[in-house]
Length: 353
Image (tube, rainbow, N blue to C red; front, side, top):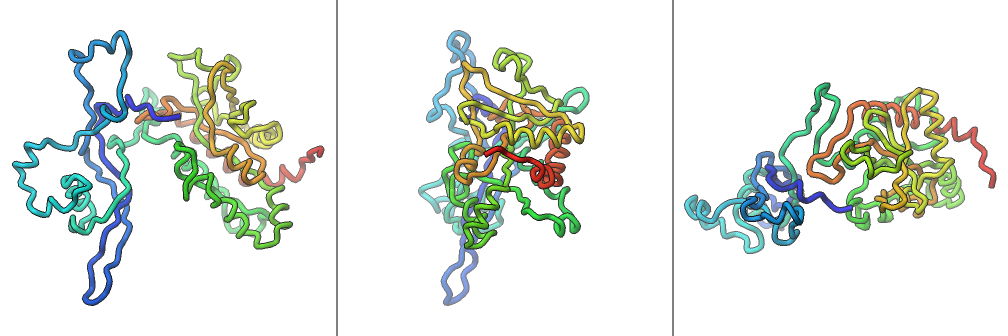
């Protein structure tokens, strides 16, 4: 869906990612290299807005920006760079700004000359927090989709103990993929062969056993959902308006942008009813486009029954997103019980072929 890039203006920003560094050389031996994770916690960058006096058209034309020329963050001024006299080592790289390399080297506690390359992303420095009169909202960067990743992982841990592992006839797992927002076609994305190969390795080379396991499998594609925004109520279909604090959202789309169907919906609904856990449904308006998830992609690639769900939230793809605390707790309880009870419920279901 792209980013709400206007929300990145006038924010305290920094960088995070991974850096390839050369470790200390030993006499007579070839150098070794290490990939290190890095996050500079303090604000080092900002994308300042243009003053209203120089941008009067914003009132008539709206806020317009060019992603190539207007989204360049400011790191420092040339004047102070010269005054600080960083030294000859500051000229170590023609590809990257020396000051960024200085900051990375300081954070990693390595010589600047040892930095060989890196993958860095711009990110917000403001910590996540609770807010609202009753502290009922969670405000943070990346709720879509770190929140569902967190909930699913915690649910699996809570549903797993020595007794359940001994009695389980099926393998339970959480699969967390990267690059979903840019199409999932990457080495670590859902459109790679990672999931297929993983499942095949679990079941060995016997394809009949593998096919039988696929038939018994169930995928919950857990990605955040759109809550009804009180200032934009017309953006939701009248009978499908997910509300914050009213539970996990089942997402369905006739054009298969979500992989949900009646059978997969039934499974989760029965578990929710048994434990009196709230559950909601979302269908996009017929006159609007619909986002998607890795659910349809994996369902088609693997042939596994799939259900698309998500915690309702505001400001999806903004630098600062927002959801409700109760939805996090109820979704955790629902998915925990799904792990515990799916096997028994599924064995009682007969599907007419």
